[in-house]
Length: 222
Image (cartoon, rainbow, N blue to C red; front, side, top):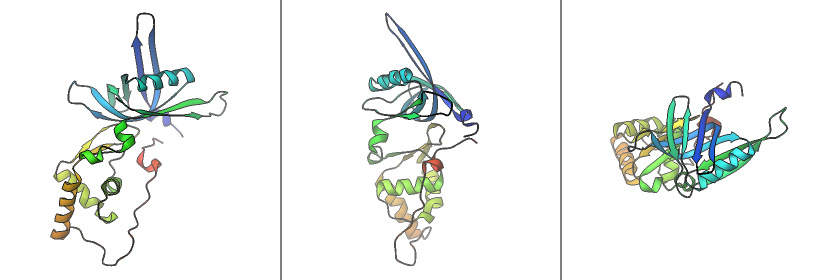
């Protein structure tokens, strides 16, 4: 797409041994991570998506499996040291570009937490977008909450009131973390219904939730 490179970041992998020095720099199109309180300028990575050549992608894929650390930077994100940690998953693909004989290689790395969806069970829900409608539909789906799409704005206000939504670090997206257990969420919903702030539809029938697409979740710079 036009000017897509303007939203790209960089991933740098450097490793020095007695005999060799590895220094790889790859274009990064998507990143999701959580800042760590200590040490500063470090983050737990959850999603890393990058493109490059065969050798570079192979080296970074091996580094991910070994739990190595990388430097990540991009639009609005100052250089930060990140790691996908243990049991990360990698997915590889190819991107054929017109006029180029060999395709570019595409690598996506996912943390165990994001790949398994285990964060929701621990009272922390990591989402790739902070858009109001998406947050409500995703949380309702992950926790099995009763509700209708019209409650999205009310739910967003509840998250702010309880300080339960925290921005995450993102390149090419606007991720967030919801810090609330299923029991807390049900308490808020119960209060909302009892107080009349929200209500169920007057007519019975299936609830039609809006469809979500990756294009809608991930931000594209035109």
